[in-house]
Image (cartoon, rainbow, N blue to C red; front, side, top):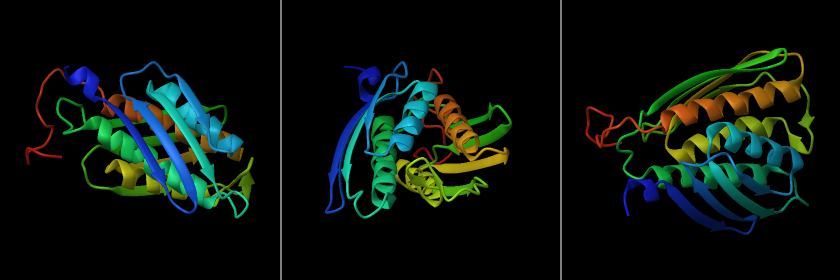
Length: 198
């Protein structure tokens, strides 16, 4: 089995707050089966998988009777950890990715570095308290948690947009496109770092 088979991860995480199972295939076609208990989060994860060309299965049973925070945070952490595991030693990848994505009047920019060092700068500019069944503040937390789990640097800025649904969906699409570029194979077996390790 070669490198083609190594860009896949299956993870489970159980706490007193959530139980999550994820299967992620980096060299996929954008297929997804998502069930988090939060319809709008499902919609965003389907969007992420579709535009990143990842095949993604993610299920979560969370303490939604408390609120949506733990579900959003833990899904991001486990999805990020699956991305990290799927990348393995991060050999032969482009490492860097950037993209703009519009959605009608909204425009988002994402820049990622699969550096092995988690960092996130997130600027979404949301004004509504909730989008669907998710508290708006939890989207910023999602992206921070995802960057931590994936051990990557993420800069995500929504440059404009009058509609918060459009703003956050453009952000997920821009992130997906940047990840699609960053995980792409560069035709070598080298680690893309002067350190020799990521």
